[in-house]
Length: 216
Image 1 (spheres, one colour):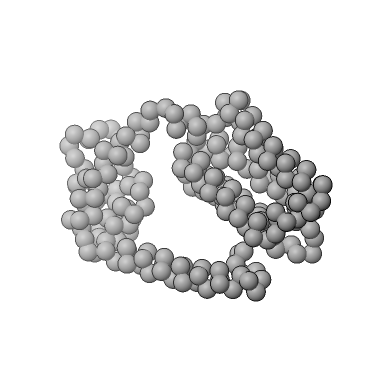
Image 2 (cartoon, rainbow, N blue to C red):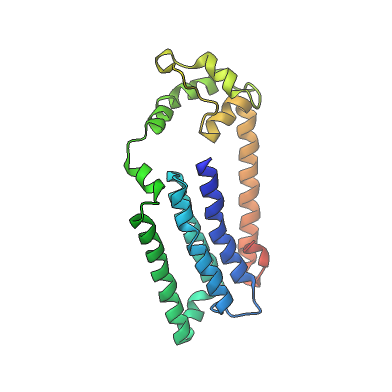
């Protein structure tokens, strides 16, 4: 799935930033760290080549998250400390622009092309959005069971969209969970999000004490 591939590739950027920030035994602008940062930049064309439009958003989020991690580790202070640091910062920024520009120039930016083109698949998903919402309501609160979307949606699929092709997934995680797991699926997701927020808040408050868990 192009979206999953783009998501995994985008995750590499904040992961590499975390590796750089946690290496406290060497300067942030060391040659090894700069090599790692350059490697993170060259992941971006791979995201564009997947053809995932959501991947563009995820890649931007990954770059922003990676930048925040490095800034919190003192990157701005270290870049401005020496002439080499300032040149390194300018060089990485120029490399980012160059890599994206070359990717678009050589027409490998499948994601950008799909973003600008009319996407019949996306239109089909939009057409079926509200019918799937109705299925969630009808099967609430228990749902139909995990792995049953393919068979269940055939029962509810509107006649006007019937054809040789069919949906084997909702292509919308929240809707598919509602169809298969019902209200209880949403309760589990909500509980997980609440737990994540509580733990993240605790870690964020401890960042002043230099807890490495904040970066991880």
